[in-house]
Length: 394
Ligand code: TTP
Ligand code: MG
Image (cartoon, rainbow, N blue to C red; front, side, top):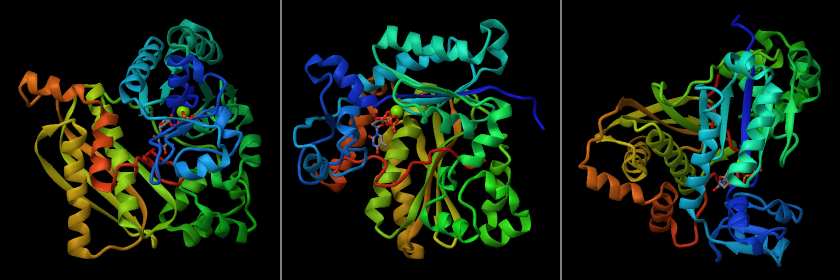
């Protein structure tokens, strides 16, 4: 067993919409949808005012408008979101070097080594929340727990502008109440399987022996066994030290539509590229991970023409791998898709000017351009209509 740790998960509230409401006072207090209006547009996020009407991320704009006709639709402005994200991450780094970004608006912080200086994790969390509000006029929610799994769940419990602490001695009681579907990657089918076994909460899984779990859930059994006991030893690894940067997502159902998977892959590629750029890392190798409905998992890798951290370059490789897989092996419905960049090289490979010019095109804009090119003008969609799980499995 490792030493006890204190992990924070910070996640900004209604991030893109909150930036727009900050920058455009006329939007404050109003239902706002971020996305491109039009028949194929998709909601990137909804302000909390719009969520009351049932609007949410990854929903077609037409449906969101039906639920909330007075909603104001604002096209995304990637530059503003990147700038706000940079400010927020700079705040995190004042408290610990162990900051692991998960996406543009969320990160894990291991503050175990900072407790002596700052007093307590709660003090650190309150200070981070205060600094975020003072310096960016935005709000974030924080979860504090002994591991990543619980910290991420905790940050979501009191959103927006919330702080939730799960003390080590509360873990067991907490897991006893927590629905099984809260485990990342457990979709409706797996949930049903648990229900058949008489299990509805994560804590109840403790009553099942490991071999029973293995029979039922194969390679996921060990993880369920550990999570039900509150064990998650994954370390917080800052991207600066990471040997690989990846995003993956388990779908609640097997996805039988290749374009749907391409959309998710593009969002993942955008996030991976953004994290590489943040640490000035350039990846030589890109790997695609595909899991089928029967849990068989394959990986396919490719070497980039030259090391890169640009969305377009990584996307060309990721899409190439996906299309080659379909051409050679035939498409099968997909349960999990993931994009990983490895083999980092810190020396920029391009001329300074070229690099600078390319940097001006924001990650979001690049992704937007690519989506528009591939899927039509109003097809902006990042994570698909499916729960996100952008964490590698423990
Ligand atoms: P989230 O943190 O999932 O959502 P949020 O910050 O808008 O709201 P919450 O308070 O619930 O955390 O995502 C961060 C941003 O990423 C979000 O503001 C917009 C973008 N995003 C998409 O573009 N598409 C998506 O499908 C999702 C989920 C997010
Ligand atoms: Mg958020």
